[in-house]
Amino acid sequence: MTDTPALDKDYWNQRYKNGDTEWDMGEVSPPLKTYIDQCSNKHHRVLIPGGGNSYEAKYLWESGFRDITVVDISGVVINQLRKEHEQTGIRFVEADFFKHQGEYDIIIEQTFLCALEPALRQEYAAHMHELLWEEGRFIGVLFNREFEKEGPPFGGNVKIYRRLFEPFFSFKTFAPCHNSHPARKGKELFFNFRKLEAPILNKWMQK
Image (cartoon, rainbow, N blue to C red; front, side, top):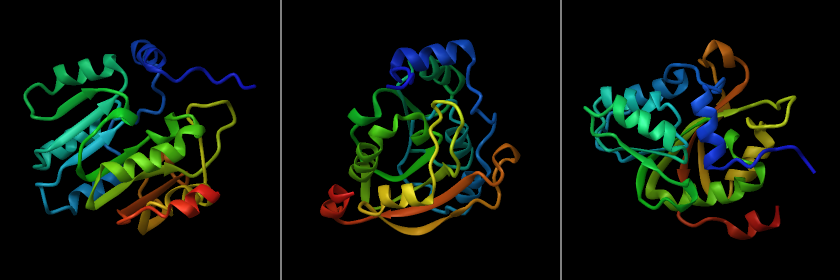
């Protein structure tokens, strides 16, 4: 038995109401900013699941992207974002990521996986694969560390993540971040994955 709380809608709503968001850097993640800056095709359909305060969505819009969707289970943060960004065309969707449907060219991971109970990680990887277009990119940052107290956040390492994602994606980049926010220096991995045409389900199921 663990003391991990039920990480449901009520849990995350309460954390946002209380301002209990110590993971929030208050700005776009530097590695993701670098990726966005070098992305010349502004017509990509972009999804940010578990988007939280969505600094990346704001930066994408300011950079000329116009097809941006943010999904979060917390109605508190989604309603706040809708008010803050009502002059933009960003779509803020209050929903369970695992029930969300769509097709995207780019999916951005930023502190979403670490917020999920580890038992959901394989379902997370499979659904990311489903949501990506056939030439889609799955990019983001992951914690390369473990945490002393019970999560969230939940940590991980290269071995764990490689085992999780290899059945679904080919790896273009998967390496320690060289430009993390100072608070996360030496504790992050940057990845840039391409969707495999068909997941290697036998390999996935054996692990």
